[in-house]
Length: 437
Image 1 (cartoon, rainbow, N blue to C red):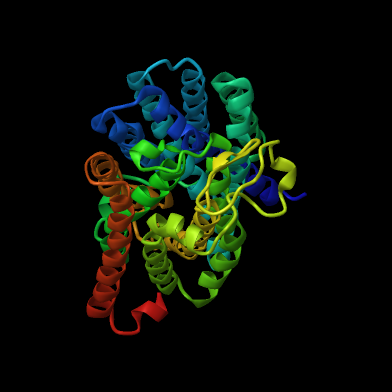
Image 2 (cartoon, rainbow, N blue to C red; image 1 turned 120 degrees about the horizontal axis):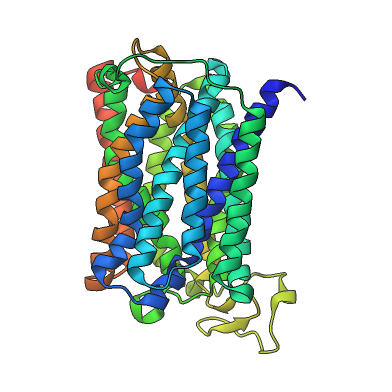
């Protein structure tokens, strides 16, 4: 196995470990909500605490990665993540949970930004989106494993076993980086954010990304909440393992498509894939609240056909009547439509993500005085306002208007993001810019 391949595989392992941690907390978030019954403010902080801390991490990790050794900075980020998941094992209240989430967000941003920067620098320009797609596929694969295993592990062994597994995985990824990833020879003088802030293509991309953050944050956060919170709070009250199955649908579809769509965007250009993925995401998000009605109208079974080995001794019942399924818990006819919706959301994101990341890496490398890590840092910065504010709005909508409106707002934000992006492309870069970028 050649040296470059070992470097890529080590960085993919970092992405795998990071994705497993995010999947674990996403899967268990409804459990924490049911356990601590947070106020609307705290419900928002359950997500925004993570996002606020991750925003604070952008400049130090991006600047440090471009000015110094990205490998060393990545090892530091993994070390902080290890401390964060150790802290989760001892959480006993809402505010402690918010604090652990903040540490998780700080570390996750550093590890994600630096691992992607190293992948972008190692990959040839014409293969960049494909390699980034593979890195993201590793993250998504761990999300699948995490979403399915974490719910079952929690139900049998509790929180501490879940976090012990996460810490072990992070330690292995840290050792792989130290052993196999070469020190980064690229050094950028000055403050690369200054040069990149006047890059015309990056400024155009921000017109899309700033609004789209609201859409993805709301939908990605509230699909598992919708699946797992109690019926009295507007949800479907599925067990953690069933929530994991729903999350797996999105991650699995995204994982399978990303390397392929990344390769296509390397060949045909990036911006059209961003617009297509964004529009598809908005359309599918609007359908999530209708999954119970679709399931009932189509007389779908309250479970997964062909998985009778999961059935309990209770008789399986149909349309509109919940049934107990071992491992999955109480299900309803909305289960299969919700899985289908989340899978389609994953496919839509597979079109957008590698194309967007490759564009930012391209501009970081091609801008004089810029840097790949700082370019990814700008990408993260633009995302933050929407991702910080959206959970507070989502928490307010859920508690005061209804959980369905979270998805209506998310879908609408995706459509406006795509519309503004296409208009700016056409007006500032010509009618053919959607094909040329």
